[in-house]
Length: 301
Ligand code: NAP
Picture 1 (spheres, rainbow, N blue to C red):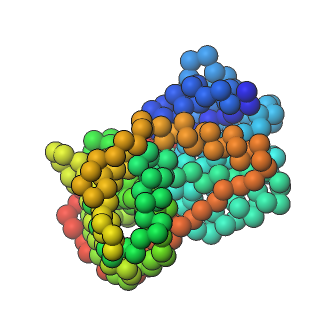
Picture 2: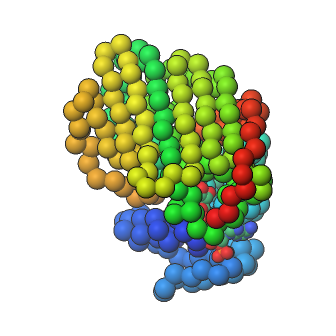
């Protein structure tokens, strides 16, 4: 088993990364770095530089929010470590390009993970769509930010991405499954008067692709993508864990997004290659560049 260090022991680290690593035959959770969080039985550092100086753990998985992540990734690569990045892989596109260049020069693996692409309906949806002519796509991604991100003020701070923090999961799926390129044509972004990031967004791309994102959805939550083609239609539900083809629910197997990410990282390190994809981030950057900004009432987590 390969030793791995987990950095940023917050919500996603404890919900998903730790169970995935512990269940994997490939990885040994050898250390954590966090100002406050620890994992029982695992060596805990509060300082990243100290961990790099005092251990030779070859793989670092960064579960921090996007803004602080770049500096950690750059230091890890400079120290010759392989790096796995939570989504989104950076606060800006340029940061990710820079990290990719550094990883290439250092000869280490960089993996920009997109967990929703590992949802069990995604690969079969991509295979089904591969030889079809897509005529329209609708994304409906509506959830309750207070339920899923309690106390996480960084989501409304600059570069926190706002509703695109979950919305980029939908974008990671469409950039994986659609058999043709698309680019954004229009967007409307709703910014609460006290926030630096949008709480809702509507987007329209070429090829008749539209999306509605909203972080104020109470009651039932919606993580749905429907695709019409010249030969029938499909829909993905619950973030890609359920797939329906021409009205017929498909058996796509169990959800194992994070175990699949760690399987992939093991393969990348073994093969000495990187997997860097900024595709989903391009659509968020385009929305910020192109979108009409509307200011709404103040919002508090
Ligand atoms: P979080 O719990 O708010 O933060 C994760 C950890 O990052 C915190 O425990 C904190 O560690 C550390 N951290 C926060 N700000 C920092 C700073 N300025 N400098 C250094 N460390 C800092 O966030 P999360 O929900 O786990 O999300 C982290 C990433 O995972 C995000 O990019 C998010 O998009 C992604 N993600 C989240 C979810 C989810 O459901 N929450 C799902 C999938 C992906 P210490 O204070 O302990 O040092």
